[in-house]
Length: 296
Image (cartoon, rainbow, N blue to C red; front, top):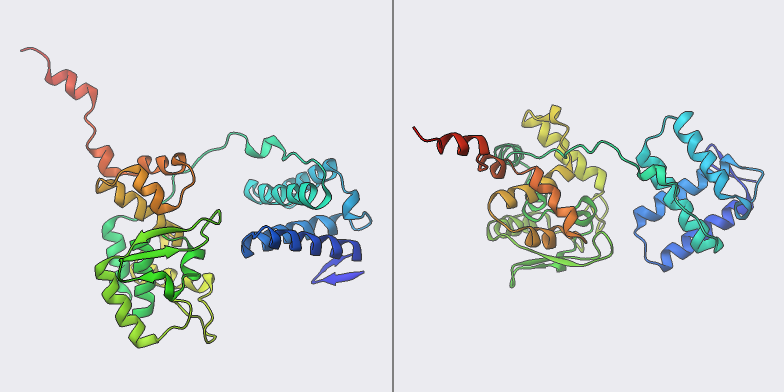
């Protein structure tokens, strides 16, 4: 029996995890997805230590999901991730059918994501004195990039001649282009002269290595504290939401925003209509129209 931290993993489980990892690598799944799937499968295998992974049934995975919720108090998001990893293992590794429990995708309350006001975004950027950190946050807001995308952005993907930034293998393994702001280009040049990054636009502690996503999150957290916005629960993804919402407020059409955000379906972009306060403020109530049309 092999030990992984405090969890016991049998040789059969080790082989199953390795096979899963190999097939995910072949399918070019992202490193983060591979990490999540393998962790969830490892937990499942240690929950049934006396049963070979190939003999685990769909009913057993359902019982495990119930255990996650009732005993450990796990969220629906956690259970969805676990179920998706089981689906991959059953279908791709074992060649067996697997159906994700429909109840995981049942009706639930949808909370609108937080969005910074333009004034808040300006305050955050103005409070950052470190040129590397300010350039990083400015680039996030200027492009709407995801956390993983800016962490993996390479110097060669910034095209100052065409004023475009190529985002390679974003979510869904799709490349896309976003405009490069002329004002931001000046700041990028000053940053480059001072820091001389190698390969990745934002290097971490190691030479030529990329900035860790957690470090990027920490940069924003410190900026929010300086700006007095630490209680707003803003995140790096909030900047992405703010980018799309502010574009909509300024009159950019939904299809253009869809392309910039890298959304596969327009339905993913439509929800920003609910976040656009300027759009809501322009709406005239039918009551006002009715009253104004009343004859004296």
